[in-house]
Image 1 (tube, rainbow, N blue to C red):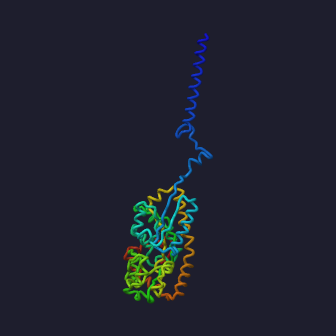
Image 2: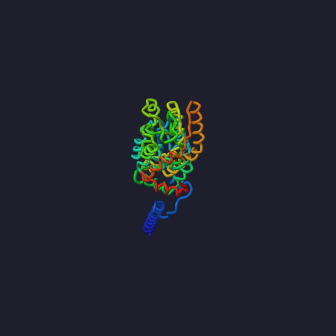
Image 3: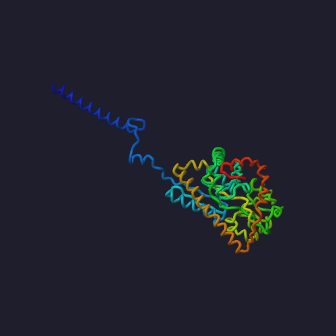
Length: 357
């Protein structure tokens, strides 16, 4: 009997051990994904699961403008804001004066996934989505408020979508503004006839060259960094640009007259490659886009004052400023809308923003 009882006790101990092991196994499994209680954890456990990575991301901002130019300084504000808000997880650095190369080359690098963002305009983006270039047409919008309104339309959002899906370009913001563009020459330009045959530097895209040609000029494509020497050497007879660029680039030293035609309202965009953008954690994507758009809108309010101050300082340096009848230039470029197939598109966008022709 004792032997049987001993064997029975041994069996009980073995069964107890097996039961304990089984319970431990079940408990462990219940905490695995898809097993047992699948309710989300709470408190610190959940916070740990959702913690973002500690990787540091870097983005180089390219612009052909000088370090002193307003748009460059505004991009530095953006870099400082993002660096601070991200606690150093996303570091932006501005490279002015074309240090990273020609605009078109750097845009191509961005498309290929390089961590660069490029300061650009609608004319260049029109190389990828043709209709986008209407945003750079002469006298398309009259001021920043109208330009910003265009960026809020369904038409603009469709352009953004096409840039992303077909060309791998992500618009971070198109809310930056650099002001109206005027002619800088060595004689007064009061009518389109005064521009006839003059070699004027402009952005080398069809929408710009056709606009200038319609106004009488001979459009010349040249990088901004070469314009001063181009005018000085007589290769150019002038340029068209905004005060926030002509002043820091000292174009007033080689041109004695500004004719305030305000033909282009320079809305500026900051773009990067979609593949690089998609590599960012979602919180940094949101931070970058929202901050870029906010800084663009905030700094736009200072552009008019800075442009006026730049004009005043150029006049002190000897620049003569004339104000021609703008309607003459508007009439001259009107046929270009028909020529480039933009007439109906203009009507559509004006309807969206509530503008009458």
